[in-house]
Amino acid sequence: MKEHEFAVIEHYFKSIASSAEGVDLGPGDDCAILTFAADRETCVSTDTLVESVHFPAGCPPSVVAARTLGANLSDLAAMGAEPHSFLLAVTLPEIDQNWLAQFSEALAVLIDRYKVPLVGGNLSKGSLSLTVTIIGQTPRGEAVRRDGAQAGDDIYVTGTLGDAARGLELVRSGDYTGYLASRYCEPIPRIEAGVALRDFASSMIDLSDGLMADLGHICEASQLGAVVETKALPLSPQLLETTKQESAVRMALYSGDDYELCFTVHPDKTQQMLAALKEIGMTATRIGQMRRDPKVLAVDVDGKPIKHGGSGYQHF
Image 1 (cartoon, rainbow, N blue to C red):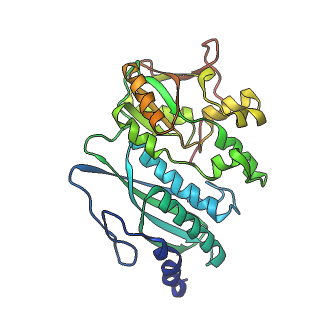
Image 2 (cartoon, rainbow, N blue to C red):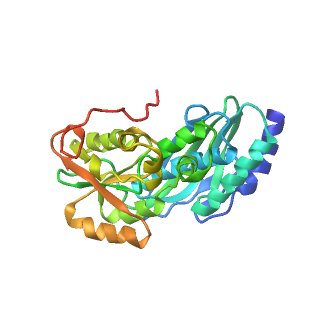
Image 3 (cartoon, rainbow, N blue to C red):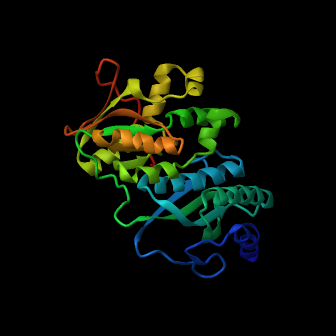
């Protein structure tokens, strides 16, 4: 591995690194050198994706690239942060030139799309896994945290929910085509929406582990509870065409990988918030309300609590 690793890094990764504001030195030295503006705060997050855990074995390299960077960018979106740069550590069972070519080509497209330069990383031998350390910035004091929700705030989500869960079912059957599969294979981090919501959201999180699990993190951090109205859940026509209503609702509540934003807003800010999202072509749906009772409940059309159909994604 050692005799190949630097040539691999040079050919597949250093070649797709691009210069950018705030990057004084990128890949090729012992460390990257980054510069940050004095009036901004830096947001940093790390996620690891492991084959057969976070994506099925044999997934196309382009899908692995999209899920790896998309999931990490989504963490920035949840804070209202703008991408600055990222580091990538890749562990491979062997040097596969074809896999590396497809992966790096897809990664280069994403780097350009989200204007987030690769500034360094690592290459090792072992079971296939990828770790990204993502770096973003917000104006000082404007990052949106999980602990700011207030009782009476409305709960909103961007986009539609449950699509990625159905998409994963299709992918596991070998079908990588169509809208639902793309929602799993190519998650779209809501960077623009996160930035727009800095002025309105009292708390925010991205939906990686499932709505009820992730909303539970907001409730825990804010020391509140919540009620989710299942009749209000935004479900796509594509999901409802292929899945029964009950199953679609369960996917929306408990399945992960949607990478939409869940956030809370004081009712007085609703109209301004919706107008700001409309300007960037994004929709948001009110699905419930924060409350002082610490329970986190989903209720049916009659307002009765429904039995839990899952607990969200479990990392262990």
